[in-house]
Image (cartoon, rainbow, N blue to C red; front, side, top):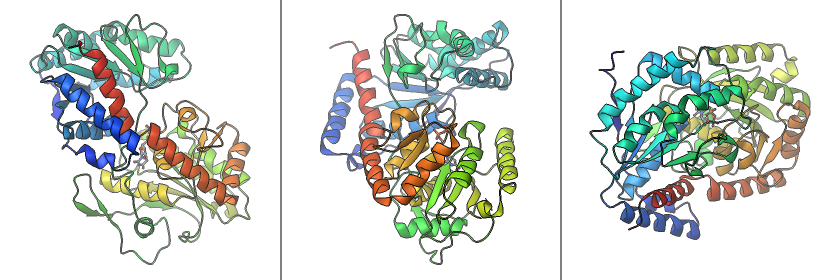
Length: 479
Ligand code: UDP
């Protein structure tokens, strides 16, 4: 293999002062975060923390790394991010691995010795470049299977190495075990392993210490930042989801603080006029993926949410036209549109399928933000879910959420207190849960408030940073 073109690229998120994050925390949390930042800065001395992953954009890991690095750098810690390189065969193999960790067949191809040799050759090419940057005593956090092959080389350099998995399924099967076996000899060299949930920890991690760290959301990102009601309505009016005369407030603030405006519009499949701002909306935002079961949400709503109710359903996902690397998305959307056409007219008139513009990631995030904030009820009827970011995003916005009782969602929602959990294969139970919240706004509001508090406590970037600080303190030799 010609590995000469393979080298990692450094990403440099602009620092963001921790004080901005402190503003959304309660006093006890703010103190914990301040203490953790001071403790880790002192313990690190002149060591650098390196994060390694395989993409700078797209995907939850990059989405989380960006703010965590920005806050770490804002706290004066030398934390850096290397995006490893690879050739198309490498990424075909790692995509296959990713699917296998989720117990899905993926492209059906093998994960045998030839694939392993290629995987290791690409890892070596990356490691040769990284060796020159990493100094003994530095901390390296390698994210997901793509980086597993680099772990032994970093350990040999004298770095303190953490391998972190952001993926997994509750039930270990022959396929998930084969995926683990593909990388296990590499990652068992690490000084520490991190998984999102206990259920995702493989049986045979050897004697490597394990920590559990759940994902988090950034309250200051365009996806989650506060928007006024006027902004929400104008943005949803502009893109075409709502009927709204006052379109004067479509501006928002970018991550770098500069002003921007929602310019693009959504592609919408609907029958009849768009809802007014007073129409209660039930909303699911997700990729057009079979495991998100948009079609199931549609049928649950059509059959089991009373036709006398004036509520409407909005199923929103990314625009798939022209996205050549996700043919499955276009297929799932087409299938949903077909099933929508087959519904009786009265049901069609209450359900819209929305493709959100993807031309600008921060604009897309702002539209999702407005939609989640405006919703009366947010649903996430996933059939399988490692961790539902959309669930925490909606809960942070004080929305009542009805979630499928699967995977990480069961850690995010306390059933009956901070939302409702329902067997996602039971359409009647799902529709009934949504209807219960629609007819009882006081209960929905109380649930939304509880949801926001539990998200503040458990799933914001602040908790994530404190856990990282504790992990790093544990790794470093005592003074
Ligand atoms: N999302 C988005 N625009 C869309 C659809 C989804 O920004 O049109 C975001 C959504 O807000 C969430 C992420 O994509 O932040 C999806 O993460 P989740 O954990 O819910 O599911 P995944 O896609 O990772 O399986």
